[in-house]
Length: 455
Figure (tube, rainbow, N blue to C red):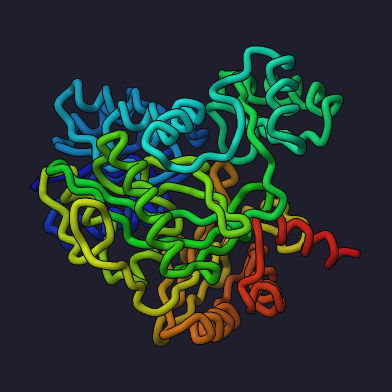
């Protein structure tokens, strides 16, 4: 087992990793920018190193500074958390080159799943369903027009190296496709330094369902059930839950086996998420996230497993400790324990979604049965304007979905944050909506509901 782990991240995920290390008896090193000197993760770690200025490009994305921090503190492993460099294959390679252990999948797995066209091709080879579309990046708009004529409109253009909705355009006909191709490629080039795009059939009302997978260095790969992530705004998740209201035993078995096959195809080690689109009873591979997810606490609540500690154990070469989980190679049928929901509490205007940085003057998180709050915020903390707007993740657990929703409402009403605007009012409105309470949503539902609410 490792003696000291450097956490190459900030905020609540850095605190989450530090907490897991403390339980395992591992020393921790926090890194921070000049803007995060008073951050809670810095106070919680055994050691801390300032790695650069406020801008993430000079600090949390500065590989040279991160490696130097690990070497001068004597760390023997690095946990990247999520975001920043968590899916940067070159960072993982550099750590290995200097004798540090990367707590995550291999650089090869990161690259293969990070390139969406390669990922789709890999999935096809192992029999995982994919949305009909181009076999790889489009060479020209003429290629796209020919494929669209074959599979039918509407179609979706997506950046090969994309994420967060950038480099994505929908086209309902050939004229729109020609214009969308120019826009998507130029946006992808600006955002990712790679203008390649591919094309696929556009699904009108899909659900977004992701499966948590885990692999170890001994060849075992399992899944830990699904999370429903359909409530999204501009391709950013707002609320997640497990199990999915749309799930059946047969569908879970089929999607779970596909998720395990996807992870096996790249010899996956550690925590990852295989994401699918589900529509009319059919599911299609969308992408694989080669890291721990923001919403991992949802799975922890319905399994009782500590996913971050399991990441660390897997990186240290230990076999998976999960008992009785579905996956080819052994395990029984996965059965979630009750129901869990995660609400992302952001420092944003709940109507306009404009960022709301500033000082938190009052901070009183809720408690009680089935309530968990993952946060790095505290009273008096000044939220920097340089990073994402997440203040806290409120996670509730109940014996069933009805109890989880009731606990979510109670906890949201008791969650007091003053000094900045938050999305708590939005979440209270959401869980009062009939479609949300009945589980009848899709990836398009929230945007439509927000527009109708304004009208």
